[in-house]
Amino acid sequence: MRAPLLIAAAALLAAACAPADEAGPPSQTLVNGLPCTKDKLATLTAGKITFGTDQPAYAPWFVDDDPSNGKGFESAIAYAVAGELGYAKEEVVWTRVPFNAAIQPGKKTYDADINQFSMTEERRQAVDFSASYYEVAQAAVTLKTGKAAGVKTLADLAQYKIGAQVGTTSFDAATRIVPSQQVAVYNTNDDAKAALTAGQIDVLLLDLPTALYVTSAELTDAAILGQVPGGQGRREHFGIVLDKNSPLTGCVSMALDTLRGKGKLKEIEQQWLAAQGTAPELK
Amino acid sequence: MTSDVGRERLAYKRSRARRSTVVALLSTVAFAVVAWFAVTGSPGWPRVRQSFFNADVAWRALPGVLEGLWLNVRVLVVCGAIILVLALVVAALRTLPGPMWFPVRALATAYVDLFRGLPLIITLYLVGFGLPALRLTGIPNDYVVLGGIALILTYTAYVAEVFRAGIESVHPSQLAAARSLGLGRRKTLRLVVLPQAVRRVTPALLNDFVAMQKDCGLISVLGAVDAVRAAQIEQARSYNFTPYVVAGLLFVLLAVPSARLADAVTRRAATRQGAR
Image (cartoon, each protein chain N blue to C red):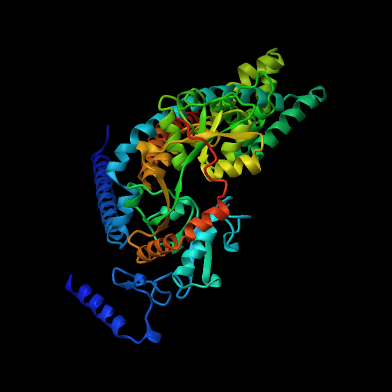
Protein backbone atom coordinates (compact mmCIF):
# COMPACT_ATOMS: atom_id res chain seq x y z
CA MET A 1 0.00 0.00 0.00
CA ARG A 2 2.86 2.30 0.85
CA ALA A 3 4.79 2.14 -2.41
CA PRO A 4 2.03 3.44 -4.73
CA LEU A 5 1.30 6.16 -2.21
CA LEU A 6 4.92 7.22 -2.21
CA ILE A 7 5.07 7.18 -5.98
CA ALA A 8 1.90 9.20 -6.17
CA ALA A 9 3.29 11.67 -3.68
CA ALA A 10 6.55 11.87 -5.58
CA ALA A 11 4.66 12.37 -8.80
CA LEU A 12 2.61 15.13 -7.24
CA LEU A 13 5.72 16.75 -5.86
CA ALA A 14 7.45 16.45 -9.21
CA ALA A 15 4.45 17.94 -10.94
CA ALA A 16 4.30 20.78 -8.46
CA CYS A 17 8.00 21.53 -8.76
CA ALA A 18 8.29 21.13 -12.48
CA PRO A 19 8.49 24.29 -14.52
CA ALA A 20 5.31 25.12 -16.37
CA ASP A 21 6.61 24.34 -19.83
CA GLU A 22 7.69 20.85 -18.74
CA ALA A 23 4.39 19.92 -17.08
CA GLY A 24 3.77 16.19 -17.41
CA PRO A 25 0.55 14.68 -18.67
CA PRO A 26 -2.53 15.42 -16.58
CA SER A 27 -2.81 13.21 -13.50
CA GLN A 28 -5.97 11.54 -14.84
CA THR A 29 -3.86 9.49 -17.24
CA LEU A 30 -2.67 7.42 -14.29
CA VAL A 31 -4.87 4.42 -13.53
CA ASN A 32 -3.81 2.27 -10.56
CA GLY A 33 -0.45 3.98 -10.78
CA LEU A 34 -0.03 2.96 -14.42
CA PRO A 35 0.20 5.57 -17.12
CA CYS A 36 -2.43 5.41 -19.89
CA THR A 37 -0.34 6.67 -22.72
CA LYS A 38 0.30 5.06 -26.06
CA ASP A 39 3.93 4.12 -25.41
CA LYS A 40 3.11 2.43 -22.06
CA LEU A 41 -0.02 0.50 -23.04
CA ALA A 42 0.40 -3.24 -23.51
CA THR A 43 -1.61 -3.56 -26.72
CA LEU A 44 -1.41 -6.47 -29.18
CA THR A 45 0.76 -4.41 -31.53
CA ALA A 46 2.97 -1.77 -29.96
CA GLY A 47 1.94 1.73 -30.94
CA LYS A 48 -1.44 0.57 -32.28
CA ILE A 49 -4.77 -0.25 -30.69
CA THR A 50 -6.92 -3.04 -32.14
CA PHE A 51 -10.69 -2.73 -31.85
CA GLY A 52 -12.93 -5.68 -32.57
CA THR A 53 -16.53 -5.82 -33.76
CA ASP A 54 -18.80 -8.35 -35.45
CA GLN A 55 -19.49 -8.71 -39.15
CA PRO A 56 -21.74 -7.36 -40.48
CA ALA A 57 -21.63 -4.26 -38.29
CA TYR A 58 -25.08 -2.74 -38.19
CA ALA A 59 -26.36 0.81 -38.38
CA PRO A 60 -26.72 3.07 -36.51
CA TRP A 61 -23.74 1.69 -34.59
CA PHE A 62 -21.59 1.52 -37.70
CA VAL A 63 -22.15 2.88 -41.19
CA ASP A 64 -21.76 0.84 -44.42
CA ASP A 65 -20.43 -2.13 -42.42
CA ASP A 66 -17.08 -0.31 -42.28
CA PRO A 67 -15.94 0.36 -38.69
CA SER A 68 -12.80 2.15 -39.86
CA ASN A 69 -14.65 5.06 -41.44
CA GLY A 70 -15.31 6.68 -38.07
CA LYS A 71 -19.01 6.89 -38.91
CA GLY A 72 -21.72 5.45 -36.72
CA PHE A 73 -22.03 5.70 -32.94
CA GLU A 74 -19.68 2.91 -31.89
CA SER A 75 -17.05 3.63 -34.52
CA ALA A 76 -16.99 7.26 -33.34
CA ILE A 77 -16.73 6.16 -29.70
CA ALA A 78 -13.83 3.85 -30.52
CA TYR A 79 -11.91 6.62 -32.26
CA ALA A 80 -12.66 9.05 -29.45
CA VAL A 81 -11.35 6.56 -26.85
CA ALA A 82 -8.25 5.86 -28.96
CA GLY A 83 -7.65 9.58 -29.32
CA GLU A 84 -7.96 10.07 -25.58
CA LEU A 85 -5.24 7.42 -25.07
CA GLY A 86 -2.98 9.14 -27.55
CA TYR A 87 -3.56 7.11 -30.71
CA ALA A 88 -3.90 8.86 -34.04
CA LYS A 89 -6.71 7.77 -36.40
CA GLU A 90 -4.35 5.66 -38.50
CA GLU A 91 -3.05 3.88 -35.38
CA VAL A 92 -6.47 2.33 -34.80
CA VAL A 93 -6.77 -1.15 -36.30
CA TRP A 94 -10.08 -3.01 -36.71
CA THR A 95 -10.63 -6.73 -36.62
CA ARG A 96 -13.83 -8.72 -37.05
CA VAL A 97 -14.73 -10.85 -34.05
CA PRO A 98 -17.90 -12.97 -33.90
CA PHE A 99 -19.78 -12.93 -30.57
CA ASN A 100 -18.50 -16.34 -29.44
CA ALA A 101 -14.90 -15.52 -30.34
CA ALA A 102 -15.13 -12.24 -28.44
CA ILE A 103 -16.05 -13.93 -25.17
CA GLN A 104 -14.03 -17.17 -25.36
CA PRO A 105 -11.43 -17.72 -22.64
CA GLY A 106 -8.35 -18.04 -24.89
CA LYS A 107 -6.03 -15.41 -26.32
CA LYS A 108 -7.90 -12.48 -27.78
CA THR A 109 -7.41 -11.07 -31.24
CA TYR A 110 -8.45 -7.59 -30.12
CA ASP A 111 -7.47 -5.08 -27.48
CA ALA A 112 -11.02 -3.86 -27.01
CA ASP A 113 -14.30 -5.04 -28.55
CA ILE A 114 -17.17 -2.64 -29.10
CA ASN A 115 -20.34 -4.38 -30.22
CA GLN A 116 -23.37 -3.33 -28.13
CA PHE A 117 -22.35 -5.57 -25.25
CA SER A 118 -24.72 -5.09 -22.33
CA MET A 119 -22.94 -5.28 -19.02
CA THR A 120 -24.14 -7.73 -16.37
CA GLU A 121 -22.52 -9.06 -13.23
CA GLU A 122 -22.75 -12.59 -14.57
CA ARG A 123 -20.86 -11.72 -17.74
CA ARG A 124 -18.19 -9.99 -15.69
CA GLN A 125 -17.05 -13.46 -14.59
CA ALA A 126 -15.75 -14.07 -18.09
CA VAL A 127 -14.66 -10.71 -19.47
CA ASP A 128 -13.78 -7.19 -18.39
CA PHE A 129 -16.13 -4.33 -19.16
CA SER A 130 -15.11 -0.71 -19.52
CA ALA A 131 -17.16 2.08 -18.02
CA SER A 132 -20.54 2.51 -19.70
CA TYR A 133 -20.64 4.49 -22.92
CA TYR A 134 -24.36 4.32 -23.54
CA GLU A 135 -27.55 3.71 -21.64
CA VAL A 136 -29.90 1.68 -23.77
CA ALA A 137 -33.62 1.00 -23.76
CA GLN A 138 -35.52 -1.85 -25.44
CA ALA A 139 -38.29 -1.17 -27.92
CA ALA A 140 -41.09 -3.25 -29.43
CA VAL A 141 -41.48 -3.14 -33.23
CA THR A 142 -44.48 -4.43 -35.18
CA LEU A 143 -45.92 -4.25 -38.69
CA LYS A 144 -48.33 -1.33 -39.16
CA THR A 145 -50.84 -3.76 -40.65
CA GLY A 146 -50.04 -6.50 -38.14
CA LYS A 147 -52.25 -7.96 -35.43
CA ALA A 148 -50.34 -6.20 -32.65
CA ALA A 149 -50.51 -2.76 -34.26
CA GLY A 150 -52.81 -1.18 -31.70
CA VAL A 151 -51.06 -2.37 -28.55
CA LYS A 152 -50.80 0.22 -25.78
CA THR A 153 -49.77 -1.72 -22.67
CA LEU A 154 -47.35 -4.44 -21.66
CA ALA A 155 -50.25 -6.69 -20.70
CA ASP A 156 -51.63 -6.38 -24.24
CA LEU A 157 -48.20 -7.02 -25.69
CA ALA A 158 -47.99 -10.32 -23.81
CA GLN A 159 -50.91 -11.64 -25.92
CA TYR A 160 -48.78 -11.71 -29.05
CA LYS A 161 -45.95 -13.84 -30.37
CA ILE A 162 -42.69 -12.06 -29.62
CA GLY A 163 -39.29 -12.63 -31.20
CA ALA A 164 -35.75 -11.45 -30.55
CA GLN A 165 -32.15 -12.13 -31.43
CA VAL A 166 -30.37 -14.78 -29.37
CA GLY A 167 -27.89 -13.61 -26.78
CA THR A 168 -29.29 -10.09 -26.56
CA THR A 169 -30.87 -8.31 -23.66
CA SER A 170 -33.80 -7.78 -26.04
CA PHE A 171 -34.39 -11.52 -25.71
CA ASP A 172 -34.22 -11.28 -21.91
CA ALA A 173 -36.72 -8.43 -22.03
CA ALA A 174 -39.01 -10.55 -24.21
CA THR A 175 -38.94 -13.47 -21.78
CA ARG A 176 -39.86 -11.07 -18.98
CA ILE A 177 -42.92 -9.85 -20.87
CA VAL A 178 -44.27 -13.33 -21.62
CA PRO A 179 -42.89 -15.85 -19.20
CA SER A 180 -45.61 -18.33 -20.15
CA GLN A 181 -45.23 -18.36 -23.93
CA GLN A 182 -42.02 -19.34 -25.65
CA VAL A 183 -40.19 -16.44 -27.26
CA ALA A 184 -39.02 -17.03 -30.84
CA VAL A 185 -35.24 -16.77 -31.01
CA TYR A 186 -33.22 -15.89 -34.10
CA ASN A 187 -29.56 -15.99 -35.02
CA THR A 188 -29.55 -12.40 -36.17
CA ASN A 189 -31.90 -9.46 -36.22
CA ASP A 190 -32.04 -9.92 -40.00
CA ASP A 191 -33.61 -13.36 -39.51
CA ALA A 192 -35.97 -11.90 -36.93
CA LYS A 193 -37.01 -9.16 -39.36
CA ALA A 194 -37.72 -11.82 -41.99
CA ALA A 195 -39.91 -13.64 -39.47
CA LEU A 196 -41.75 -10.42 -38.65
CA THR A 197 -42.36 -9.72 -42.34
CA ALA A 198 -43.48 -13.31 -42.91
CA GLY A 199 -45.97 -12.98 -40.06
CA GLN A 200 -44.38 -15.69 -37.94
CA ILE A 201 -43.97 -13.30 -35.05
CA ASP A 202 -46.16 -10.31 -34.26
CA VAL A 203 -43.65 -8.26 -32.31
CA LEU A 204 -39.88 -7.90 -32.54
CA LEU A 205 -37.84 -6.57 -29.65
CA LEU A 206 -34.78 -4.50 -30.49
CA ASP A 207 -32.70 -1.96 -28.66
CA LEU A 208 -34.18 1.47 -29.26
CA PRO A 209 -31.55 2.93 -31.62
CA THR A 210 -31.69 -0.19 -33.79
CA ALA A 211 -35.50 -0.12 -33.68
CA LEU A 212 -35.49 3.48 -34.84
CA TYR A 213 -33.11 2.65 -37.65
CA VAL A 214 -35.05 -0.46 -38.70
CA THR A 215 -38.41 1.29 -38.81
CA SER A 216 -37.09 4.33 -40.63
CA ALA A 217 -34.71 2.76 -43.12
CA GLU A 218 -35.30 -0.97 -43.48
CA LEU A 219 -38.88 -2.00 -42.71
CA THR A 220 -40.85 1.08 -43.59
CA ASP A 221 -44.13 -0.79 -43.08
CA ALA A 222 -43.15 -1.38 -39.46
CA ALA A 223 -43.54 0.92 -36.48
CA ILE A 224 -42.35 1.19 -32.90
CA LEU A 225 -45.05 0.37 -30.35
CA GLY A 226 -43.06 1.76 -27.46
CA GLN A 227 -40.23 1.21 -25.07
CA VAL A 228 -40.10 -1.88 -22.90
CA PRO A 229 -38.79 -1.49 -19.36
CA GLY A 230 -35.57 -3.15 -18.28
CA GLY A 231 -35.33 -5.93 -15.73
CA GLN A 232 -36.07 -5.09 -12.08
CA GLY A 233 -36.09 -1.41 -12.95
CA ARG A 234 -32.36 -1.46 -13.64
CA ARG A 235 -31.08 0.54 -16.55
CA GLU A 236 -29.06 -1.30 -19.12
CA HIS A 237 -25.63 -0.07 -20.17
CA PHE A 238 -23.31 -0.87 -23.05
CA GLY A 239 -19.63 -1.39 -22.20
CA ILE A 240 -16.52 -2.11 -24.22
CA VAL A 241 -15.40 -5.72 -23.74
CA LEU A 242 -11.77 -6.44 -22.85
CA ASP A 243 -9.94 -9.61 -21.95
CA LYS A 244 -10.46 -10.71 -18.36
CA ASN A 245 -7.99 -8.80 -16.17
CA SER A 246 -6.74 -6.84 -19.16
CA PRO A 247 -4.24 -4.13 -18.21
CA LEU A 248 -6.11 -1.84 -20.61
CA THR A 249 -9.51 -1.92 -18.88
CA GLY A 250 -8.73 0.88 -16.46
CA CYS A 251 -7.34 3.08 -19.18
CA VAL A 252 -10.29 2.56 -21.54
CA SER A 253 -12.71 3.35 -18.70
CA MET A 254 -10.71 6.42 -17.82
CA ALA A 255 -10.81 7.57 -21.44
CA LEU A 256 -14.61 7.14 -21.49
CA ASP A 257 -14.98 9.03 -18.19
CA THR A 258 -12.87 11.86 -19.58
CA LEU A 259 -14.97 11.92 -22.75
CA ARG A 260 -18.14 12.05 -20.64
CA GLY A 261 -16.68 14.86 -18.54
CA LYS A 262 -15.95 16.87 -21.65
CA GLY A 263 -19.46 16.32 -22.96
CA LYS A 264 -18.02 14.48 -25.93
CA LEU A 265 -20.07 11.31 -25.35
CA LYS A 266 -23.32 13.28 -25.49
CA GLU A 267 -22.10 14.97 -28.63
CA ILE A 268 -21.35 11.68 -30.40
CA GLU A 269 -24.69 10.30 -29.24
CA GLN A 270 -26.55 13.29 -30.62
CA GLN A 271 -24.73 13.02 -33.92
CA TRP A 272 -25.46 9.36 -34.56
CA LEU A 273 -28.43 8.43 -32.36
CA ALA A 274 -30.29 11.71 -32.68
CA ALA A 275 -33.80 10.33 -33.01
CA GLN A 276 -33.49 8.87 -29.48
CA GLY A 277 -36.31 9.15 -27.00
CA THR A 278 -39.21 9.50 -29.39
CA ALA A 279 -40.93 6.27 -28.36
CA PRO A 280 -43.41 6.23 -25.46
CA GLU A 281 -42.83 3.90 -22.52
CA LEU A 282 -45.13 0.87 -22.42
CA LYS A 283 -46.44 0.21 -18.95
CA MET B 1 -14.02 -84.46 -27.06
CA THR B 2 -10.97 -82.26 -26.96
CA SER B 3 -7.52 -83.68 -26.63
CA ASP B 4 -5.06 -82.58 -23.98
CA VAL B 5 -3.18 -80.64 -26.62
CA GLY B 6 -6.41 -78.99 -27.67
CA ARG B 7 -7.24 -77.99 -24.08
CA GLU B 8 -3.72 -76.69 -23.64
CA ARG B 9 -4.03 -74.64 -26.79
CA LEU B 10 -7.35 -73.25 -25.56
CA ALA B 11 -5.86 -72.36 -22.17
CA TYR B 12 -2.90 -70.70 -23.86
CA LYS B 13 -5.21 -68.70 -26.12
CA ARG B 14 -7.21 -67.59 -23.08
CA SER B 15 -4.13 -66.49 -21.21
CA ARG B 16 -2.96 -64.51 -24.26
CA ALA B 17 -6.40 -62.88 -24.48
CA ARG B 18 -6.27 -61.97 -20.77
CA ARG B 19 -2.79 -60.61 -21.23
CA SER B 20 -3.78 -58.40 -24.18
CA THR B 21 -6.78 -57.11 -22.20
CA VAL B 22 -4.49 -56.16 -19.32
CA VAL B 23 -2.00 -54.49 -21.68
CA ALA B 24 -4.79 -52.58 -23.41
CA LEU B 25 -6.15 -51.47 -20.04
CA LEU B 26 -2.76 -50.34 -18.78
CA SER B 27 -1.88 -48.47 -21.95
CA THR B 28 -5.28 -46.75 -21.92
CA VAL B 29 -4.79 -45.67 -18.32
CA ALA B 30 -1.25 -44.46 -19.06
CA PHE B 31 -2.50 -42.54 -22.09
CA ALA B 32 -5.34 -40.99 -20.09
CA VAL B 33 -2.95 -39.92 -17.32
CA VAL B 34 -0.55 -38.29 -19.79
CA ALA B 35 -3.41 -36.55 -21.61
CA TRP B 36 -4.91 -35.41 -18.29
CA PHE B 37 -1.67 -33.86 -17.09
CA ALA B 38 -0.94 -32.29 -20.46
CA VAL B 39 -4.36 -30.62 -20.46
CA THR B 40 -4.63 -29.66 -16.80
CA GLY B 41 -1.00 -28.56 -16.65
CA SER B 42 -1.45 -26.08 -19.49
CA PRO B 43 -1.36 -22.44 -18.46
CA GLY B 44 -4.87 -21.74 -19.72
CA TRP B 45 -6.52 -24.73 -18.01
CA PRO B 46 -8.08 -22.91 -15.04
CA ARG B 47 -9.91 -20.57 -17.41
CA VAL B 48 -10.87 -23.36 -19.80
CA ARG B 49 -12.27 -25.35 -16.89
CA GLN B 50 -14.15 -22.32 -15.67
CA SER B 51 -15.55 -21.62 -19.14
CA PHE B 52 -16.32 -25.11 -20.41
CA PHE B 53 -16.66 -27.43 -17.42
CA ASN B 54 -18.39 -25.34 -14.80
CA ALA B 55 -20.71 -27.53 -12.72
CA ASP B 56 -22.87 -24.62 -11.49
CA VAL B 57 -23.47 -23.33 -15.00
CA ALA B 58 -24.12 -26.86 -16.26
CA TRP B 59 -26.74 -27.44 -13.58
CA ARG B 60 -28.43 -24.14 -14.33
CA ALA B 61 -28.47 -24.83 -18.08
CA LEU B 62 -29.75 -28.40 -17.82
CA PRO B 63 -33.52 -27.80 -17.56
CA GLY B 64 -33.57 -25.47 -20.57
CA VAL B 65 -31.36 -27.75 -22.64
CA LEU B 66 -33.48 -30.81 -21.74
CA GLU B 67 -36.63 -28.98 -22.73
CA GLY B 68 -34.98 -28.11 -26.04
CA LEU B 69 -33.91 -31.72 -26.52
CA TRP B 70 -37.51 -32.83 -26.09
CA LEU B 71 -38.38 -30.69 -29.12
CA ASN B 72 -35.51 -32.32 -31.06
CA VAL B 73 -36.79 -35.79 -30.18
CA ARG B 74 -40.39 -35.02 -31.15
CA VAL B 75 -39.34 -33.50 -34.48
CA LEU B 76 -37.04 -36.45 -35.09
CA VAL B 77 -39.71 -39.08 -34.50
CA VAL B 78 -42.45 -37.40 -36.54
CA CYS B 79 -40.21 -36.37 -39.43
CA GLY B 80 -38.38 -39.70 -39.40
CA ALA B 81 -41.62 -41.64 -39.87
CA ILE B 82 -42.85 -39.39 -42.69
CA ILE B 83 -39.44 -39.50 -44.40
CA LEU B 84 -39.35 -43.30 -44.45
CA VAL B 85 -42.69 -43.50 -46.24
CA LEU B 86 -42.05 -40.67 -48.72
CA ALA B 87 -38.52 -41.85 -49.51
CA LEU B 88 -39.79 -45.32 -50.33
CA VAL B 89 -42.34 -43.79 -52.69
CA VAL B 90 -39.74 -41.60 -54.40
CA ALA B 91 -37.34 -44.53 -54.75
CA ALA B 92 -40.09 -46.71 -56.21
CA LEU B 93 -41.01 -43.96 -58.69
CA ARG B 94 -37.36 -43.54 -59.69
CA THR B 95 -37.05 -47.22 -60.50
CA LEU B 96 -40.24 -47.52 -62.57
CA PRO B 97 -39.37 -49.20 -65.86
CA GLY B 98 -40.66 -48.35 -69.32
CA PRO B 99 -40.81 -45.20 -71.48
CA MET B 100 -44.33 -44.33 -70.35
CA TRP B 101 -43.10 -43.48 -66.87
CA PHE B 102 -40.31 -41.21 -68.07
CA PRO B 103 -41.94 -37.96 -66.79
CA VAL B 104 -42.43 -39.48 -63.35
CA ARG B 105 -38.88 -40.77 -63.25
CA ALA B 106 -37.53 -37.43 -64.43
CA LEU B 107 -39.55 -35.58 -61.80
CA ALA B 108 -38.36 -37.88 -59.02
CA THR B 109 -34.77 -37.55 -60.21
CA ALA B 110 -35.03 -33.76 -60.37
CA TYR B 111 -36.44 -33.71 -56.85
CA VAL B 112 -33.60 -35.83 -55.49
CA ASP B 113 -30.95 -33.79 -57.31
CA LEU B 114 -32.39 -30.51 -56.06
CA PHE B 115 -32.92 -31.29 -52.40
CA ARG B 116 -29.87 -33.46 -51.95
CA GLY B 117 -27.75 -30.68 -53.42
CA LEU B 118 -29.36 -27.78 -51.60
CA PRO B 119 -27.79 -27.09 -48.19
CA LEU B 120 -30.34 -27.81 -45.47
CA ILE B 121 -29.91 -24.36 -43.96
CA ILE B 122 -30.94 -22.72 -47.25
CA THR B 123 -33.94 -25.03 -47.61
CA LEU B 124 -34.88 -24.02 -44.07
CA TYR B 125 -34.76 -20.32 -44.87
CA LEU B 126 -36.66 -20.75 -48.14
CA VAL B 127 -39.41 -22.88 -46.60
CA GLY B 128 -39.43 -21.19 -43.20
CA PHE B 129 -39.50 -17.55 -44.21
CA GLY B 130 -40.38 -17.81 -47.90
CA LEU B 131 -43.50 -19.94 -47.79
CA PRO B 132 -45.41 -17.94 -45.16
CA ALA B 133 -44.32 -14.67 -46.79
CA LEU B 134 -46.47 -15.67 -49.78
CA ARG B 135 -49.46 -15.13 -47.47
CA LEU B 136 -51.46 -17.91 -49.04
CA THR B 137 -54.21 -19.38 -46.95
CA GLY B 138 -53.66 -22.94 -45.80
CA ILE B 139 -49.91 -22.62 -45.46
CA PRO B 140 -48.89 -23.34 -41.87
CA ASN B 141 -47.22 -20.53 -40.01
CA ASP B 142 -45.73 -22.48 -37.14
CA TYR B 143 -41.96 -22.51 -37.33
CA VAL B 144 -41.70 -26.06 -36.03
CA VAL B 145 -44.04 -27.32 -38.76
CA LEU B 146 -42.22 -25.31 -41.44
CA GLY B 147 -38.83 -26.48 -40.19
CA GLY B 148 -40.13 -30.04 -40.20
CA ILE B 149 -41.23 -29.64 -43.84
CA ALA B 150 -37.73 -28.48 -44.80
CA LEU B 151 -36.16 -31.41 -42.95
CA ILE B 152 -38.53 -33.84 -44.67
CA LEU B 153 -37.79 -32.36 -48.10
CA THR B 154 -34.04 -32.69 -47.62
CA TYR B 155 -33.82 -36.03 -45.87
CA THR B 156 -36.40 -37.71 -48.11
CA ALA B 157 -34.00 -37.03 -50.99
CA TYR B 158 -31.11 -38.67 -49.13
CA VAL B 159 -33.09 -41.65 -47.91
CA ALA B 160 -34.73 -42.19 -51.32
CA GLU B 161 -31.27 -42.65 -52.79
CA VAL B 162 -30.40 -45.16 -50.10
CA PHE B 163 -33.59 -47.10 -50.88
CA ARG B 164 -32.91 -46.92 -54.60
CA ALA B 165 -29.45 -48.36 -54.08
CA GLY B 166 -31.06 -51.19 -52.13
CA ILE B 167 -33.71 -51.82 -54.79
CA GLU B 168 -31.13 -51.86 -57.58
CA SER B 169 -28.89 -54.20 -55.61
CA VAL B 170 -31.47 -56.96 -55.82
CA HIS B 171 -30.28 -59.40 -58.48
CA PRO B 172 -32.25 -59.48 -61.76
CA SER B 173 -32.64 -63.22 -61.38
CA GLN B 174 -34.89 -62.51 -58.39
CA LEU B 175 -37.17 -60.45 -60.66
CA ALA B 176 -37.15 -63.18 -63.27
CA ALA B 177 -38.00 -65.77 -60.62
CA ALA B 178 -40.86 -63.62 -59.33
CA ARG B 179 -42.15 -63.11 -62.86
CA SER B 180 -41.98 -66.86 -63.52
CA LEU B 181 -44.12 -67.42 -60.44
CA GLY B 182 -46.69 -65.20 -62.08
CA LEU B 183 -46.28 -62.20 -59.78
CA GLY B 184 -47.14 -58.79 -61.23
CA ARG B 185 -44.83 -55.80 -61.13
CA ARG B 186 -46.33 -54.35 -57.94
CA LYS B 187 -46.38 -57.65 -56.11
CA THR B 188 -42.79 -58.37 -57.18
CA LEU B 189 -41.71 -55.04 -55.72
CA ARG B 190 -43.64 -55.54 -52.49
CA LEU B 191 -42.96 -59.22 -51.83
CA VAL B 192 -39.59 -59.86 -53.41
CA VAL B 193 -37.59 -56.72 -53.98
CA LEU B 194 -38.38 -54.41 -51.06
CA PRO B 195 -37.82 -56.90 -48.21
CA GLN B 196 -34.34 -57.67 -49.55
CA ALA B 197 -33.59 -54.05 -50.38
CA VAL B 198 -34.61 -52.69 -46.97
CA ARG B 199 -32.58 -55.33 -45.13
CA ARG B 200 -29.50 -54.47 -47.14
CA VAL B 201 -29.66 -50.74 -46.55
CA THR B 202 -30.62 -50.78 -42.88
CA PRO B 203 -27.12 -49.71 -41.67
CA ALA B 204 -27.09 -46.85 -44.16
CA LEU B 205 -30.58 -45.81 -43.03
CA LEU B 206 -29.54 -45.78 -39.39
CA ASN B 207 -26.57 -43.66 -40.36
CA ASP B 208 -28.90 -41.10 -41.92
CA PHE B 209 -31.05 -41.32 -38.82
CA VAL B 210 -28.16 -40.31 -36.57
CA ALA B 211 -27.24 -37.49 -38.93
CA MET B 212 -30.81 -36.26 -38.78
CA GLN B 213 -30.79 -36.41 -34.98
CA LYS B 214 -28.30 -33.58 -35.05
CA ASP B 215 -29.76 -31.69 -37.98
CA CYS B 216 -33.20 -31.50 -36.34
CA GLY B 217 -31.82 -28.69 -34.23
CA LEU B 218 -31.24 -26.55 -37.30
CA ILE B 219 -34.92 -25.63 -37.28
CA SER B 220 -33.84 -23.25 -34.54
CA VAL B 221 -32.82 -20.75 -37.25
CA LEU B 222 -36.56 -20.26 -37.77
CA GLY B 223 -37.14 -19.27 -34.16
CA ALA B 224 -37.70 -22.56 -32.36
CA VAL B 225 -35.69 -23.28 -29.23
CA ASP B 226 -33.99 -26.67 -29.53
CA ALA B 227 -31.29 -28.08 -27.25
CA VAL B 228 -28.40 -26.28 -28.92
CA ARG B 229 -30.31 -23.01 -29.02
CA ALA B 230 -31.25 -23.34 -25.35
CA ALA B 231 -27.57 -23.84 -24.61
CA GLN B 232 -26.72 -20.76 -26.67
CA ILE B 233 -29.21 -18.67 -24.73
CA GLU B 234 -27.62 -19.73 -21.44
CA GLN B 235 -24.17 -19.15 -22.87
CA ALA B 236 -25.02 -15.61 -23.95
CA ARG B 237 -26.41 -14.88 -20.52
CA SER B 238 -23.32 -16.02 -18.64
CA TYR B 239 -20.54 -15.78 -21.27
CA ASN B 240 -19.74 -19.36 -20.30
CA PHE B 241 -19.53 -22.23 -22.79
CA THR B 242 -20.47 -25.04 -20.40
CA PRO B 243 -24.10 -25.23 -21.66
CA TYR B 244 -22.79 -26.30 -25.08
CA VAL B 245 -20.86 -29.14 -23.44
CA VAL B 246 -24.05 -30.20 -21.66
CA ALA B 247 -26.03 -30.19 -24.91
CA GLY B 248 -23.24 -32.03 -26.72
CA LEU B 249 -23.16 -34.81 -24.13
CA LEU B 250 -26.93 -35.20 -24.32
CA PHE B 251 -26.74 -35.56 -28.10
CA VAL B 252 -24.05 -38.22 -27.75
CA LEU B 253 -26.28 -40.08 -25.27
CA LEU B 254 -29.11 -39.83 -27.77
CA ALA B 255 -26.97 -41.17 -30.62
CA VAL B 256 -25.46 -44.12 -28.72
CA PRO B 257 -28.55 -46.37 -28.91
CA SER B 258 -28.87 -45.76 -32.66
CA ALA B 259 -25.18 -46.53 -33.17
CA ARG B 260 -25.42 -49.79 -31.17
CA LEU B 261 -28.56 -50.74 -33.06
CA ALA B 262 -26.79 -50.12 -36.37
CA ASP B 263 -23.86 -52.27 -35.20
CA ALA B 264 -26.19 -55.08 -34.15
CA VAL B 265 -28.07 -55.01 -37.44
CA THR B 266 -24.83 -55.08 -39.44
CA ARG B 267 -23.53 -57.96 -37.34
CA ARG B 268 -26.74 -59.92 -37.75
CA ALA B 269 -26.68 -59.44 -41.51
CA ALA B 270 -23.04 -60.53 -41.63
CA THR B 271 -23.70 -63.69 -39.60
CA ARG B 272 -26.66 -64.52 -41.77
CA GLN B 273 -24.62 -64.16 -44.96
CA GLY B 274 -21.79 -66.16 -43.44
CA ALA B 275 -24.19 -68.91 -42.39
CA ARG B 276 -25.69 -69.13 -45.84
